[in-house]
Length: 387
Ligand SMILES: O=P(O)(O)OC[C@H]1O[C@H](O[C@H]2O[C@H](CO)[C@@H](O)[C@H](O)[C@H]2O)[C@H](O)[C@@H](O)[C@@H]1O
Image (tube, rainbow, N blue to C red):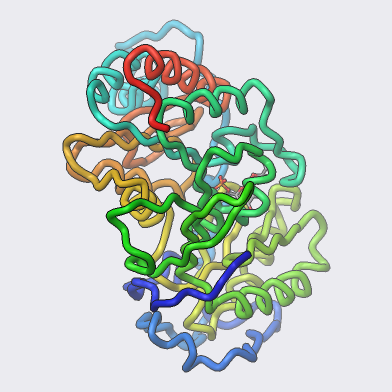
């Protein structure tokens, strides 16, 4: 189904990788050589990457802290009565909740903000629609959640924006009426609208499920062989680490350490960083107990939201309220995108206080489902169906 884009993609180069590669390997594993000629991809790349140098403990501790913090602990305070004068950890949680109130208790306010406006809903998958589980292949969404999402999609355009490959996440969700962006937004299937001439945004028209014509946008298309190669390397170098799992998402690769003994997290991270250290085309980012190797391009879930809004014909503005719900660091770009101009609503799914650009919070997938049900009900009462 995938075709070659007719026009160059509008991808800009990143200013810096999220996490610069470390210096010399402590394990004696040398960075792999890529077979793909670098010149082919050079238009995307401006990131100055440091040559491997001295291994530094500060960076190492930084990784480890980041890896430890990457999946928040359950909020033990829920359901307790609070002593507002205590000044301990409880008050930290409370002040976070004041800054990022529950989207359920604030539902009326959110609905008021969306009233008489065009709403578009963007949903992350893992940790948002499905609970976090040890085996990524077992992260299934419930039928009840599926029907809540289906009902929302009946009243407003709805898209899934996931770190997983588009094929995988669309199979897991199983709703043909949604739009999908896989590989952290680097593989988008969106609608074609009349103000958006063919190829204008670097996309191609393709025939999708049930013969429907859709827009396919893959800004990192040229990286497929690069990711393929790094995936094979990652499988090889993590073979000896019990519990490590590597996934190929076509435009990025994930290295999971949720099932790896904590003492081996740092050596695992070191191997992953070493594998990309000398390649300016790649960068490493952190997700929930997962390291992601991604093309070093300026494209992320936030850009995918903007692209989809434009495709849907809802350019950002006062009349449009994009709602984004997600649980991960990679969702922060999307929270920023919907927060621009103060029109959109970002909702972080987290059971613990976290630095975020989202305005609201929900504790976990069951609260997400509750919110979606209320949204669908309110939307059905308030507006005619969008399609
Ligand atoms: O953007 P998302 O849809 O949230 O995808 C992000 C990553 O999700 C998956 O990993 C996470 O969920 C797994 C299943 O619950 C869990 O085992 C893992 O620890 C989490 O990181 C997926 O497997 C990754 O490839 C995605 O990048």
